[in-house]
Amino acid sequence: MRWRGRRQSSNVEDRRSGGGGQPTGFGRSGRSGRRGGGGFRLPGGLGGMRRASGGGVKGIIFLAVIYFALKFFAGIDLMQMLGGGGLGPTTQTRVERPQPQNTQRTNRSAQNDEQLEFVSVILAETEDVWRGIFKSSGKNYPEPKLVLFTNKVESACGFASSASGPFYCPGDSKIYIDLSFFGQLKRDFGASGDFARAYVLAHEVGHHVQNIIGVLPKFNELRRSMSKTESNKMSVRVELQADCFAGMWGYYTAQKGLLDRGDLDEALNAATQIGDDAIQKRTQGYVVPESFNHGTSAQRKNWFKRGFESGRLDQCNSLSAKRL
Image 1 (tube, rainbow, N blue to C red):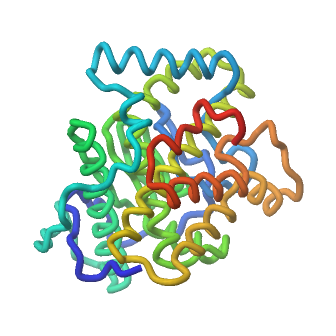
Image 2 (tube, rainbow, N blue to C red):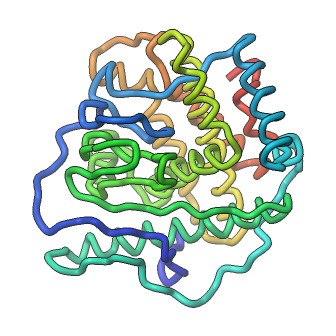
């Protein structure tokens, strides 16, 4: 991926310190307090994966409530946004490269500085794409913040450790990541490459988009009264939509000529490696479909491809799809 020398986002908050150990895994054990709004998890076992979402009658009610609530109370027409066709970015990538805010330079390796530049550029690219999509629908895109941390962090959704993996907190509209996650993604899951790492961030930005259009708030409300099984089913749909949104970002990134041969394969491999079934087979030797809440390898790969090949919001409506 051709990311070097491009605009860096100013929406990066660097809370890293110089020292600290390595994370031990990627599960829910590190989270406490209120739940966030979706995440990119590499769990170490059954308890490591989260989110929820169901189908059937509750799914239909879920969509209807979101549509009418947003249309009449927020002035947002989801049918217009989800059916508006191939909306692309309308802004040009700017040449200036502002430095990320709150950046600490002490006790930081050259590798970490390169990672800082990388995530700042990727975040800027997502800003350009989603700003254009929202503008095409007559809406503004409130940009999320990206928080970099080491070992543990406090968010509006509670405390989290590196073991949580990257996550999005709707309470403060921030994405949180310990950059050592990228090392584990490559080392333990065989998912390497710039575009694989970019997919991780684009997925979390996808959750931010869901938060803006009302999907996450309604989901977090509904799952309080759902059974664990229903919650897991709904979670899969929410997570797959975030994967599709990440694919949409990839579509417009490719249109800019920023992708190289093999980049798409890197993202699809990452999606395959972190499917619920693949992780459970790797960690415990068998799968429990009822516990899936991010989607199988095939589902995650397919929904990313849907967004990547179409660039269309209406192709990402996993919430009401009959088949995932």
